[in-house]
Length: 116
Image (cartoon, rainbow, N blue to C red):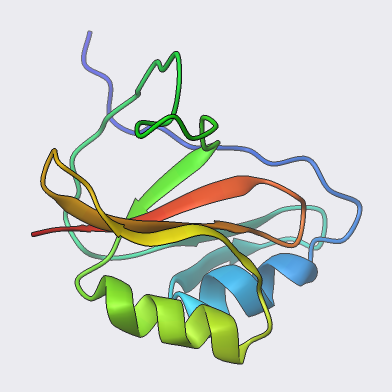
């Protein structure tokens, strides 16, 4: 058996709220929208990873999602311009990433990062 895909499912009564954060700000494509489910993604080839954490690193809370971007500073500007409050960072971490934490419209703590 081979795992082909891992999908994160986030429960919400407001499916449309995802569009502003995940599509408009982060630039993910809308892959599927049936009204009761909207799936966002990218044609970029990505590694499948699942992390298990006792803390988020640097004594931060464990984020529910981590999204790696090619330009974390541009993502930070876009989040601020869209009115999303930054909860941590930006920080250059000792393990080689630059990152910040932000909450999506559903209250999920999201770690936005780039490797340095």
